[in-house]
Amino acid sequence: MIKRESLKFAEILQDPSAVYDRPEEILEDKELTEEQKLELLLQWKYDAILIDECDDENMCGTENSKLDQVLKCLNHLNSYEDILHS
Image (cartoon, rainbow, N blue to C red; front, side, top):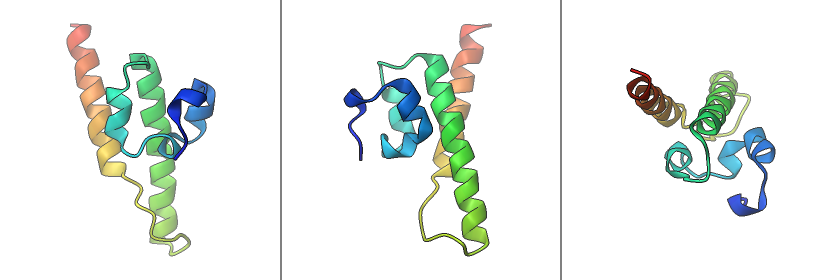
């Protein structure tokens, strides 16, 4: 895993799962804005969908996409945003 402190946001955005072990860590990262958290989770979601599709076609290894965790975090973040804007 890559140390988060040594990377810029654009580098983290390329592969959030290389920096964070769990999607929940993105929500817990106090250095990120809400918008950055959303961007990272959406990127992780995109990557996870590709991994799942690849896995369904037996083209990948046994990598866990963590799609369920990512979706829960996105839901949590969106719920939080709804509360702020209501």
